[in-house]
Image (cartoon, rainbow, N blue to C red; front, side, top):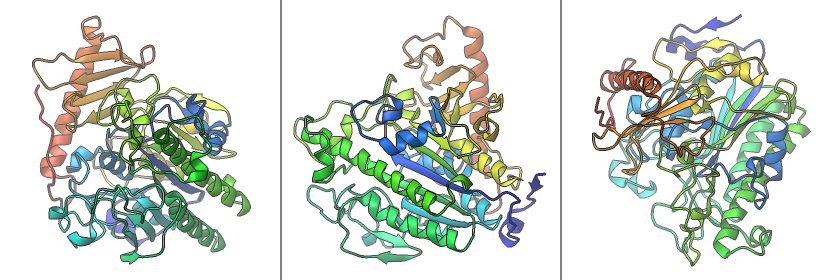
Length: 481
């Protein structure tokens, strides 16, 4: 039986314990390309723990980050709503609004303890520009840390940091990548050495162990730093790839470092006897950085160019599949059958509605939700997506501005009279190589109408707000009918 949550105030004030209270963990890599993991066919990179978990769960081959860059995707994850509805169109633009109902708020309403570990990038940790990273002029107005967004325990940084020896500032862009770890409003200082993923995971595992000791269900977001630049790996990790260039060694080593921490997490869940009581999602926030053509000499900002988008066109910042179709799986022993693969279109917008379904509740009000519940798909039902997946971005002039995935097709709009729309059969043509817009005019017209209708709804949310206290931030995309 589902419980209808009537109001946000009730949701916060009256914690309830769901009849079935599995732990839920949302793992996210940063700039990890579709082809950067073993479970998607990369024979070079060493990701045994991710590969094993993907094989023991449900692997997605058409999982969309929705955002082609970091912050928009993370906002979609948190809310189930496209970030353009509340102005988070790019990185370092705005913050996750307090009025948005996020996953931590949903989980806390059901008696869960909540934690966030790793990168945040949904607002600053401080109002002091000296302690903030990028865009210091807007630090105060973008203040929106996770501990003020319903997370009980946090260990986090505002944005990305070097993936190895984060205090070593050699070759780093400062103050952007100067390390400031924060925990519930206090800056934490220590002699941080080694893997930044391990530094972060140490705190995440403490959170998991404490929750288990207290017999309290938990929901946590664990957002890794790698392989996003500044990309560095320790000597032992680089030695795993002796025949590769130094830049590729650092890049692949940073992925293997991330993989080891996923392995440590799983081992901890097993030792605590709660693995079968824990649902885990894994994905990347967008496709790989750069052009795919690395610079001859290694530097911590060029290593990311080694990222692989698989067969897809485009990379980070593009709405083509290479920018938004990312490696992903779901893992839940006993509830998700092992060894299965799904080509159903699913996305980060689906996380929040699915969390609600897992906890046996419904979203708490009638604000527009762009994602859909995929619990039936996870549990092996004959599931079909009944809603489309929308995309909108203005961070790359060489990419279309808006897109829609519906059924087996994907339509992209440039919002430019000089550039034709693009329509692809993404089941048969995942590389988006054959534009069908003139061959299938009826499909193109239908999807165009749906997409423009959604953009109208999103712009209405942006201009007027969907809840009391809404404050407009950022900007909306240019829409040409």
